Image (tube, rainbow, N blue to C red; front, side, top):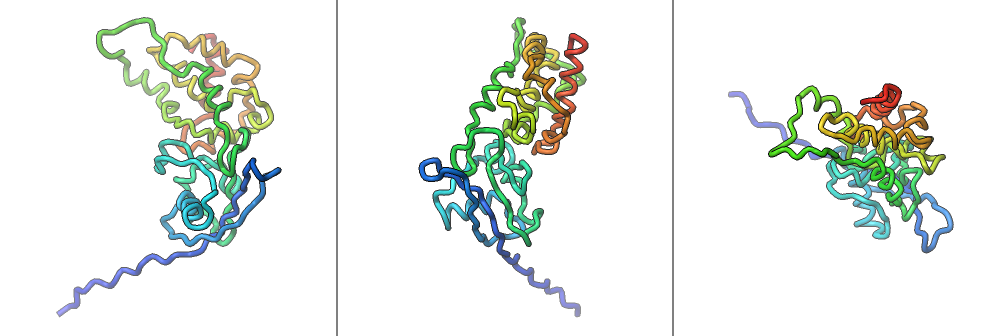
Length: 247
């Protein structure tokens, strides 16, 4: 008789990862500094899990934002090994764990504490492009739209306002007035919506000297987007609409 006894499943083995985190507490620190933590991790863990273990088990003063932990809320955007990412979507095993993992706050926004930045300048730019449907008609039910018309702006509906794209932009780092990629993406979402009647208003707003013409097409924003939005393409389409004088 054959032996059908299944071989025992080997339990996953932990490994130690070093995280170098750029710390800053405005109450005590004149300048940010790097602090090292050793954390026991598993291959299925994410950088967010490592930050939780540090905060819960080693240093409760570590400050960072997080909410859903599933790549939807966008609150845990940070620089990991020099790239803007969501900590909840970055698996530790996908990084080189033989070297320290560097974690710091996203650039270009005022640093408040540790990995937390002031998001208000980012949201001010977002609000300025009027990111909401504007239509004078009042249908009895829903505003109908064809599948083709919907597809025209489908990509830019995916934005979760994490600021990863905007804070990866060299122009945004050096020019505090630039709207930034995320604001332009959200303007695009309504500029090309066939149900909206304020496209020209938004095009006029983004035709400002700090609008789309400040973009240098470096593709940093597209690379940084955790939702896979073709950000640079969206900015180019807004530029083309301005040149045509219509969407």
